[in-house]
Image 1 (cartoon, helix red, strand yellow):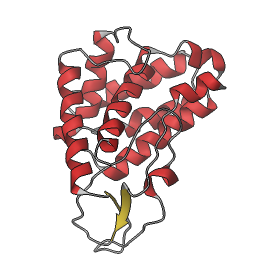
Image 2 (cartoon, rainbow, N blue to C red):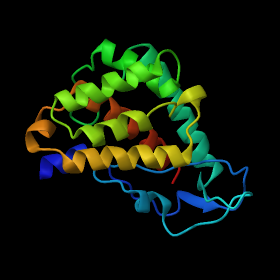
Image 3 (cartoon, rainbow, N blue to C red):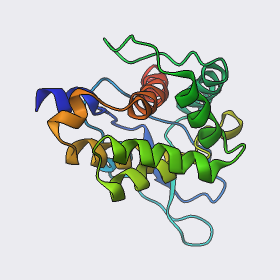
Image 4 (cartoon, one colour):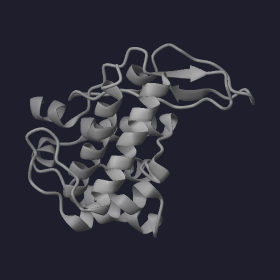
Amino acid sequence: MAFQLGLSLTVGVAGILSMTASSHAQPVLSDVTGNIITTSDIVGDSFGRGGGGELVLVFETSEIRANVFDAAGFVNERLAQRNLPGVGNDTSPIPGFVQENLALVLTGTGNVDAGVSQIQNALVNAGANPTLAQNLATSLSGLTAGGDVNAAQFAVVVEAYNALINASSFEFLREPPEELRAIRSVLAILLNAALASN
């Protein structure tokens, strides 16, 4: 169980993301310090209605937003260089082909559907629940496109990541597939950038 928590993401996010009434709300984000992030941790109790009556999730401050956007640009650069860092004690290199595929999915360039399928298949072949693997893989599409991060999409990605981690076996988590290591790295970079703003 302790190993599983080590793979999950933790967000101590009081006042980082909120719901806003503005239909043109600008995002700004959260934190990562290691263990289990949930949508309720990110969103908190602040809700509002957008111009068309829809709920709009945004980053809490422009500083958080700017830091997360900078981190998205950093992620895109590192993936383009095939130099994405591991997280924590995980310092072994992530294979270039995994980084190349994740880059096309995150940036929304190239054959995104094939990239999503490749990530999903790698997770399933390693022992992940097929539905949860699909949810995570599809949620990543365009997450860092143009160096921007949509707050609502980011919350969905974190929720999908944690659902997969929480439903996974010890064996899967002990030897996670390279795709999961790469996704964890991306999420940690984005969350740490947001925390640096707090």
